[in-house]
Amino acid sequence: MAKYEFISKAPQIIQIPFWLLVSARPRQWLKNLALFGPLVFEGNFFEPKKFWLAIYGFIIFSVVTSAIYLINDVIDIEKDRSHPFKRRRPIAAGKLNPTIAVSTSIILLLGSLFIASRLSYFFTVATIGYTLLQVIYSLFLRSVILLDVMAIASGFLLRVYAGAVLIDAHVTVWFILTVASLALFLAVGKRRSERTLLVGSGKELGTRSILSHYPESLLDSLSVMFATTCLFSYTMFTFFQPPPKVGPQVITLIGDNLPRTLVASKWLMGTVPFVIYGVMRYLYVVHEKKEGESPERVLLSDIPLLVTVVLWTLTVFAIIYGSGFLPARILRFLQ
Image (cartoon, rainbow, N blue to C red; front, side, top):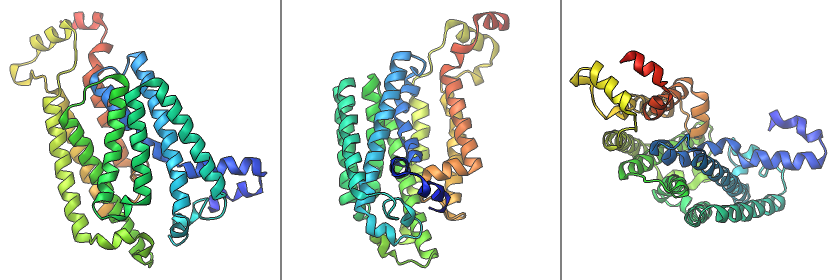
């Protein structure tokens, strides 16, 4: 907590909200971007009503996520104090009173569930399901080998379904398999990095007893399995995903100026190389750089991986929405 020493001299009225924000882990809100998946691939990202519904859903899930982290840190206070890095968390370090953390968490959960109920019944069900899953995970599932990573993947699936029911979008089975496989891949990488971190720091695996049940050979095998499944599922998703909606001028332009060899509706398959490189790069980060304990930190700190994600995002938007930004005058000129 050395980088936050300046706050220790501030009044309590400033310290408490600050430590609550740190414990809320805003960086983890990146995971809730999964709610935008159905919106983007449905082709409705620039439709104001659905866009703002997704924004509200993102905010609600972010609040719920932070509330769960507060509860989790109170539950883990003794274990965190034995961890080389987690001991710096505000609650474990004695900077934030556990009672204040739990009270704030309950208020955040009740408030977010009330607001969710004003948006959509099924979204509320998904939000409650996600909350219960996270609580059960903190109390029980994270100590059960294999079920712990499956619970993490289920959290991502609930995010996707929450985003889908909020805007009444359809999600294909291949998209669901892609999300599940990617989540399992990241969860296994997280477990391997946690194990490497504790062993490398000279700490006993007892601080995270579940890690003692995960030999490196098993984690390596699971990483390969889920990486393969993720790549296959995403490839099939892009192949079967309906082609983006384009105007007749674009269709005429493509048909008149491209050979039949290059005319195809499976344009999203052009994003597959980015996913292949991204998965390989993450494997490199986990196995060679010994990172991966925090996937969101890896995404923000590993420049090649971050660039790949940005390029993938831009390419997806260009394919799905690009024709809508081509002025009719330019299209007529090209014809």
